[in-house]
Length: 596
Image 1: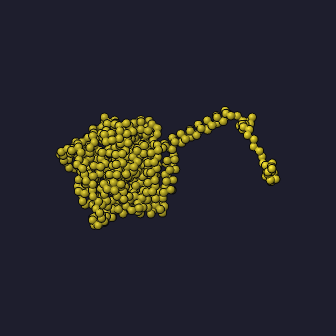
Image 2: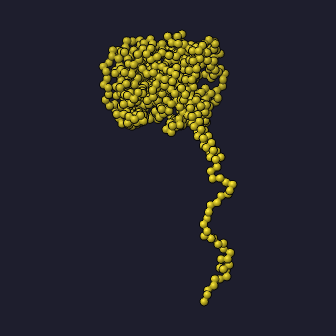
């Protein structure tokens, strides 16, 4: 019996398409080609263009001369971060990350190779006389990215023995119409131990990258100068300055505690610095500026110099003191000069932010409301209007330092051991508000008047709209004898009053072009094993800091007696190419004058 499929199933089988098992073969149309020469050439061209674009883009974006760094990056940063401190942190993080990945901005071109701007300071031949002031890199996060911008000196800090938060936020304010800043940071710091570990790691990474290993022996090799670079900067022709200061909770009336704070910082940080900067001039730490009086300053600086000369390193860090631009009377300046000579300090940084406020400029100009509010904030003012004060004060200090101390220098002290005994860390009280609240309160009350914003009228007893900051200081007729003089047209500054219009007479501007062998021997500043008469009477070096934004201004402060012109606020507003621009302007002025 045959079983037949239902009719429906037969119908489905009849209409279902059948798939044969024949092999499948790839086919292509006769009009196509497997390897078209035209496509290969086009792909090669596209690839070459892409590589060239990336390469040129890399070279452009990492060149500090690129206009994007001056005209786009700073305004965008200010737009994205209305708070100036947030912008500061963002810029620091960006430079740090870009350096890590090798795409950081750097000075390109011949730069300092021609030696036009070379100077000598503290026995080192520096590539140029430009520096970056402390405060831009408070905790030594980005010294290498900053050196890549082209300065010969980078100052990090200020660094305190113990970590401290500084003053409450907001504490930084822009005065954009004047390209100025007002800050009351209050020396916020991660502390000497944290920064010392960061600097030690930097030294060991340098040793490892140059084939010396990464252990203590390799570190010692670098710090003793056996690798041919300064132990602080790790870059030929450059110096690293480390700024130190006391903690805010350390009362300025307890001088022994203040000394201990500074010595502790030297013990932790000294071996990683070419220069140690003692900051007794911050206007935002109550009582700090009172330490600029001769007696306490001499005691502090003497202890710092002794500690620096005891650093366990073949060459010792030189010590400088950072002074206030507001302490400008003859008596105050001479007291600081006496302390410098008696303690054996190598030089002075003139100066810091000022507690005074400039008038609106030009005369009759009405400040934007936001800038007007910023000028009423408590804190130190920095910006281009400080330049005239800085230049005048540099000339005053040059004259006083060249004149020497008013008293005889003490006889040499016995040399200190090469390595000091361990210095205990300053102990922070469990309840600082309760333990020293009264001392701090008294200190704050005493300094309250000084911390208030002052205008020229309240500071000098007279005022007239549209004037520059008045110092009462007169520049000497010649502050650079036996040096070639460069004459540049006097600046027609918008900050000048109608009573002080440019006369059209060229102002002398000079820069030393002496070779190292032509200088008197400054080497003892780095090699002394203890305070000695020879060390104390060595030529004193001045770094100028305050309001310098152009190559002409840098030349002017050098002519007034400084060895290095330092910048901070100018970089904030001008971008990472500011250092290179200033150096280029200096070279153009020198070369242009030499052709006449």
